[in-house]
Amino acid sequence: MLLSVNDIHKTYQTADGPFAVLRGIDLTLKAGETLALTGESGSGKSTLLHLIGGLDGPDRGEVWLAGQNIATMDDDGRAALRRGTVGVVFQQFNLIPSLRVADNISFQARLAGQEDQAWSAELAERMGLRAHLNKYPEQLSGGQQQRVAIARTLAPKPRLVLADEPTGNLDETTASTVMDLMQELVAETGAGLLMVTHSAGLAGRLARRLHLKAGRIV
Ligand code: ADP
Ligand code: MG
Image (tube, protein in one colour):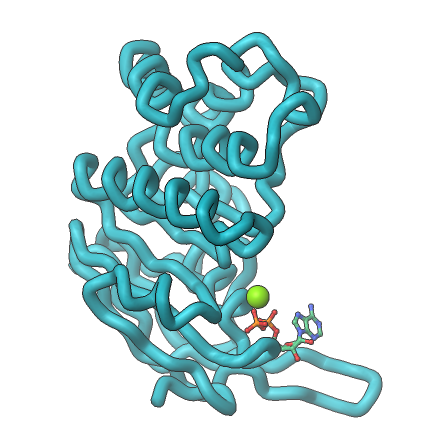
């Protein structure tokens, strides 16, 4: 099993008192599997993704990723995992403005000590970015920026790809093209894909679907 989430709980402290966002979440994902996570705005989808990606720790429960329980790791351990094993694609692209496209694509692979120039070049080619490698992110359209972000995520060959509404800022046609490319490349690498979306259409592209409501999977 690539990913096993066991009885995860997360409560945020707010001005109105504690707010239990996740109240006992279980899910599993095998290598090569694709899973959509749906739910209304505010249902805790991003929170759950952050816990799985090691961006934050749960109050209770276990997150087993490639044989390690990341819920008990310290910050350094989680950071190492983020660099190598897990890749995250965000709705807001999150490219580094001061770096050219080519260096944005290589950035995480370099940090992880896993740079494979042939693979980075192939990703750029397949993502239709070859003519844009010397440009800066601000010179690209939204769809192009998200393709850079996906290439950057896939460059270190992560075993698990997490995507948080990756096409939420794109028009429908561009979103569909970007999804096609992301799914194709993820499938080729054999990684697992867990994607948050509020779109039933996009969720329907993935093999399984879980719905989050009132802090639980329903
Ligand atoms: P979704 O991604 O499904 O829209 P989120 O996981 O972003 O939901 O947020 C779930 C709930 O938790 C929301 O009500 C949000 O306002 C709240 N929340 C998210 N992050 C924090 C935080 N750091 N502190 C307090 N409340 C938060
Ligand atoms: Mg969200």
